[in-house]
Image (cartoon, rainbow, N blue to C red; front, side):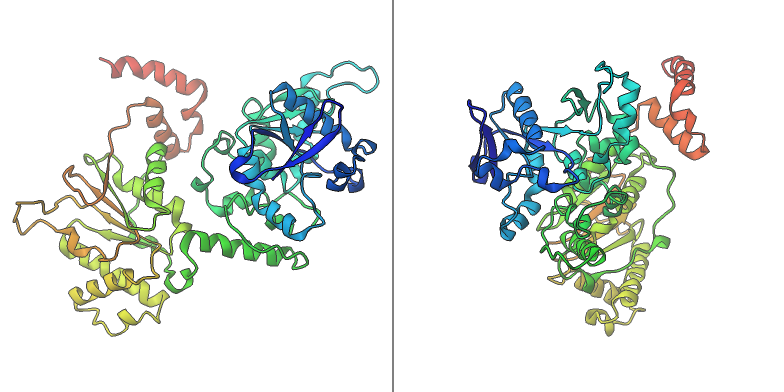
Length: 474
C-alpha cells in the first residue's frame, strides 16, 4: 500500500508499506473530474508535476485535514495506485474495501456542495447546502458506496473544505439519499443483510466502466474474482453472484442445494427485537470448519421457535439446505425426516445414498438422510430441531423421552439449532431466552400485528407508555 506525505516544502512524496507495517492514515473519498486528466496521477506525483492540475486542490485539502487530525500520511486513489500496472490495479481493487475500513478517518470531499454564495461570498443557510448534499454526484457513483460503509469515521466536507458533519450526525439525510440502513451506517455487520439487499443499495449507482458495477462490490462481500474488463456488466454481475454463493455455501454447493420447504416451518407471530440474540447465533453458527450447535432454551412462549424461524429467513442464502424437524416426539421426528428425504430426492435425484432406500422403512430412511448430511463435501446445511421438550437426560430411562443424539448426523460439520424448554440439554452452546421487559418491544409487536405503525413511535407510544407504566408497576 502506498501512502502520501506532504513535506515541509509543500511537495508530495509516496511511501510504500507492507500490510503489517502500515501506519495510521487518512483516506479521501471523492468523485473524479469529468476530464480524468485533471486528476493528479501516480506519474504526476513521481515527477513532481501535481500542482499544475485542478485535482491538486484535493491533495492539499486532504493533507491539511490529515495534519489537523494529527495524521502524517493519507491515501488518494488517483495517485496512490499505478494504474498502468494491471496486476497492481487488480490487487488495489480487491483490497480497496479493507483499505477504507482500516483508515483512521475518511474525508468525503463534495465538489458540488458549496456552503458559500458564489456572488456574495456569504455562508448559505443549512437547508440550501443540505439540498445540494442530497443531490450530490457522490451518492450516484458505484465506488463511493463501499467508501461510505467501510470506514468507521466518515466526515463530509463542502467544496470550500468546510466540515458539514459525519455519517452519524448526517444519518437521516444519508439514509434518505442512499437507502442504506441506519444500522449499517452505524457500523452494523453486513452479514446481517441478504446479498440481494446489499446489491440493491448499488442499483441506482453508476460507474464509468460497466463491469465496475460488479467489481465495486467485491470488498463488501469479502470475495475475490478476476477482473475481466470487456466482459460486460451482465457477465460481471453473474460472476459476482456466483462467487458470493460459493463464499457462503462452498464451491460444490450445487450438488447439495435443496429448496426451503415453507410448509414444514410452523407459522410464527410477528417477530421483533431479539437482534442481540440473532447476532450471537450468527456468530456461533456460521463460518466454522466444524459443526456448530446452538440450544435455545426457555419457558414456553418466550419466542424460541420464532427466533429460529427469523434466523433461518435472514440467513437462508448462506446454507445449501435448511431442514425443519418437529422433535416433539419420536414419531413426529421420523415423519419430519421422511419429508426431508423427499425434498432431497426431489432436488437432488442423483443422491445415491437415498436412491435405494425404502421410504416406508422410517429407520432406514433416517439413516440414509444422516448419511447424506455426513458426506464430506456437504458441509453447509442447517438443521432445526424444534420443540425438543421431552429430552432423555442422563439417568432417566423413561421410554417416553427422546434421545436426540440418535438423530444427529455423525459427521463434524454443518449447523444445528435446537429449541427446548429444558435447561439441561447440553448438545451445544446454550442460549436462554427470557421474557422481553421493555414495553417498547411489546408495542412494536402490537404495531406489526395491527398494521398501525404509529403505535411504535411518536406521541401515541409516549401516551401509551405513560398510561400503562403505573399499571405495570403496581
